[in-house]
Length: 200
Image (cartoon, rainbow, N blue to C red; front, side, top):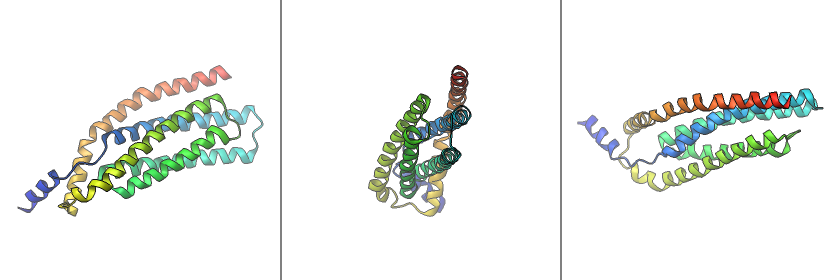
């Protein structure tokens, strides 16, 4: 029967998605929430206590929100590309990784005022995106090498079945992401409050 054939073909599909990339994308997303809030807080603090030209302030804030939009696209394309084993989405994820890295370097080196906290959090961010890029490139290479072999019997119906099974297999990552957020974000918030209280 046709349905049985679809299931058998989907089970014979060579599994190419990267669990490590999926986990790292979630970790990077959690860290970015902290990075965005902390950097925005630093910009506000610097604008209050230092002579911050209005044009430079607007530029820094605009680039920070642009960074947030790019991170959303980076996370979406990475997760979907990994689950769907799509070279196009993973390539887009790699392009966004490079763009985000350049903007992060701006906040590390070229923004109006660079504080020690900027250096620390931007360096950590660059390390995470660097690892993201390495894993995404490795995954893209694997897709390009093995995808034709693994998709010989894959029809549109089979792709839907594979996507469903992929989402189910990565449910544990979502649960881990929630637990990680609950553990890590309070620590970052505490660090944020401690830093501003100490530097006040």
